[in-house]
Amino acid sequence: MGYQDKFVQIDGLKTRYIEDGAGPAVILLHGASLGSSADVFERNLKPLAAAGVRAIAYDQPGFGLTDNPSDYSVAYRTRFIMMFMDGLGIQSAALVGHSQAGNMAVGLAFEYPQRISKVMIVGTGSLLPPLPEGQKQKGPAEGEEGTAAEPTVEQTRALLEHNLFNHSLITPAVLEQRQRMSVGKNFEAFLKRGQARQGGGGKDSKPMWQRLVEFPCPLLLMFGKNDRAGAFERATLLKEKYPQLDLHIVDHCKHLVQWDAMDQFHKLAGEFLPNR
Image 1 (tube, rainbow, N blue to C red):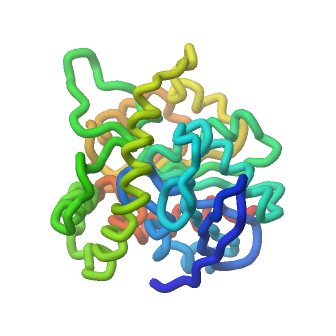
Image 2: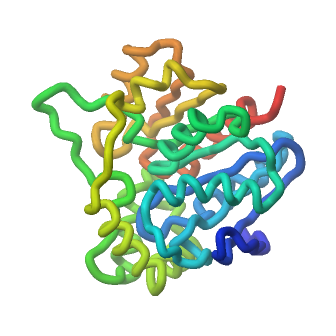
């Protein structure tokens, strides 16, 4: 741990990112739970760089050390991905989307197939089919996981434990970092994202998970067997419906797949992401 923070102005927002390696660009997109930031990929950058890519993770608007935006919608953060690529002079990139960001990455690939070369999905429950009628999907929706007031350190620990199978990964340094990214302007942004969700919006007539077989570029999906909201059952159902999908389910793994299943993540990503 310990990459030097870099900053760039994107759409008027001071935007923080960290990176490692050289080669084809890979943009790593964190999820939307309280405390999320580019740091969820910090321990993954060096192994990805060793695989031959330029691995870049950035704090999305309203997260980490990036300024808070005036628009808190998912649609804005999705558009911001392209603006970030433009700001760094990146014409084409592979996207790795964790949790809510996986849906964002998939949507962009459909819209800009000439600029998105590959997509790797990590723990994105919203790209899985629903459970059969009568079975409930327990757990908060993507982006809703947080607290009603600024979290205490113990509440931040509890949220991390909920997302991790291997609790030994929650070191004092990790906890301090996550707590720092969960309070102040980032907690204010979390509340405003919740208000933006309540504003509603239109939905595609066809669920995104049904469109994955029409995907315009190479696609890899990775889920934790022990993740929330029936992820294992739903991922299994998706694989049964579309056996041609490159889908992997990892045991002893919850929502932070890139932490719990670090070795498998690096192996799959290292084989998939470079232009070969």
